[in-house]
Image (cartoon, rainbow, N blue to C red; front, side, top):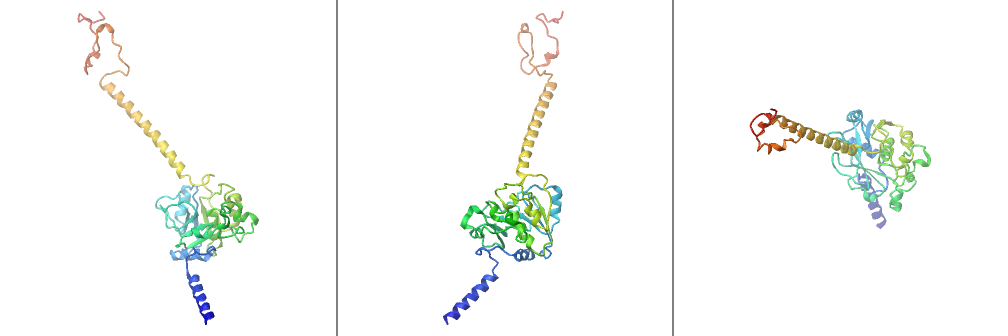
Length: 299
């Protein structure tokens, strides 16, 4: 009787767990089908083409292409996103700093530790980071692009922070059979080579993500240039303001001097004439200076 009760409880628990979409208590990454299910629930039944937008520099033409993409995936603080631009799914790396501004609530979570995954996570991708040692949810043999024969260079343990968030996302997207084209924007893998696996070997993504169409960034800088651009804009604005203010003051002074017939240099009146014109009466400056007898001094 006790055996049957134990068996029944085990079956019930297994059924409940298998039907749950909460991956926070699991130490395994979500399968590709979970990501496809998320797209479908959002109303995207055709997931054949997706746009993956990193936080690197974007051109105007990049933004136009992204706008026409049915599914747009962005990362962390979406630093290069402009107001009104589309975000279908947001991927967030833990532990990291991010806000909820300008983008949808994160549903795809990337982390080395199960404890950091929120309870409402829909898709979970675990990465191995050597800096966390035994706290990692997966072991050091975890690989990027498991279907690719890229040898030891694809091991998460190659970099002390494992693969980049973008690399981890592309690795899962590559495994989704319904996806045929992955348009990649704002990524150039020019960051610290000691940090991320796909930064140490920049050919991993280009060689293993066979569905990826990589659109080159407008420059070779890593990360968003928005902050730098804003600083430049502020400096330019200050310079323009100072120049306009200086021009306005100069023109005002010149205008005043012309109206009141005042030269821009101090008057050098003859000392023997006694004193300078009194008050604001400057009309005498237009008349010839008179001597004590009231006659013209030139006579």
